[in-house]
Image (tube, rainbow, N blue to C red):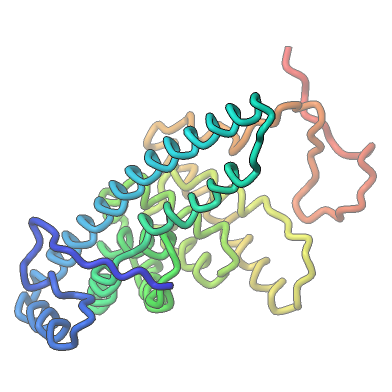
Length: 287
């Protein structure tokens, strides 16, 4: 069910507070306010989206803490009942409400969704960060339009955009490379060619070294192969920037550290999965 959350956000142009309203006349008033702002509309819409993102974060943190406290109390009650020999499984099942309870806090408001759609019309690259946050936060009826906006903005984004992307927004961009939307992933790769930094190296390296084993059609396989090749071509660009920025720790650190390195077999990219494991390479043991 769609969550409709409307409220007043301080510091935002008052004419935008009716964005996403269920009343048609109020929505028209908000659209008229955007038109009247002219070139200032982009700044106001960005300010509104930033405020909405902060509110979502606060709601999510508060609900998560409340849910943790409630679940802890439930567990204590369950243990007490167990020691008395009167354990009731329904006590533990009471925790099943937690995911939906937290999901409400993470819901994107209709105001934020409407502001994002309005912002896309201006084709301003500063919209990339807020849009990618919305796309990866939750499923909304506006996701298709947000995706189309990112498909246009990412490949054309200037290098200067890297200075205004928050760590959270960069992580959201990197997470798009893990998804099944290969067209959007290719748009991300093209954008990172211009504004990518060492912060995206692990995600790009993971994609470049990946090898999908599920059944694919010829069209799907070609699209996946092109995406992987694009990621490989991007790697030296990001590595050079990492060297220039002095991010040697990010450059050299592996994406993950195995618990037992001696159990890891090194298979060349694209190698058949039925290769004889006795012929594969093992990493050198540390001294």
